[in-house]
Length: 141
Image 1: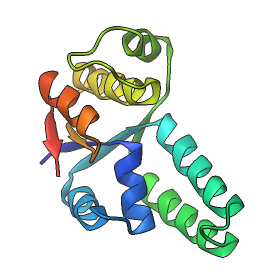
Image 2 (image 1 turned 45 degrees about the vertical axis):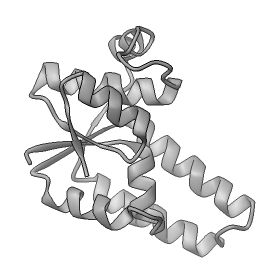
Image 3 (image 1 turned 180 degrees about the vertical axis):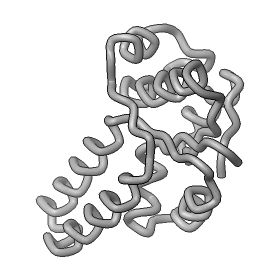
Image 4 (image 1 turned 90 degrees about the vertical axis):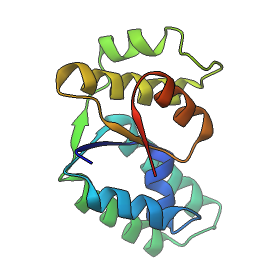
């Protein structure tokens, strides 16, 4: 697998050791290139803040997870959320309904396909996977 688009929910499963996290970690490790949206950093950060605030994890655990994400993402190509991405996210997708943040991830993966080459979508979300497949992207795991 060459380029892999890492969608936030998959990244969070890996970081938090949730179900499917091992498969996500394996896919990330096997990828020649990992791409994602700047949205992923915001979603990871907000999720960790929420988990700490609701005492589902302690502050030290949140910092360790954020550090793991920060180290990994230093090696990823991170796309900004620009006007082109937002314009595509506002359009129709093959398998509606699509939530706004998922549409931004899909639009960013499509942007990478235009700029470089089609990436494989790393997601455990069935709606994101169905749309990625319908848009001609590979899916993993």
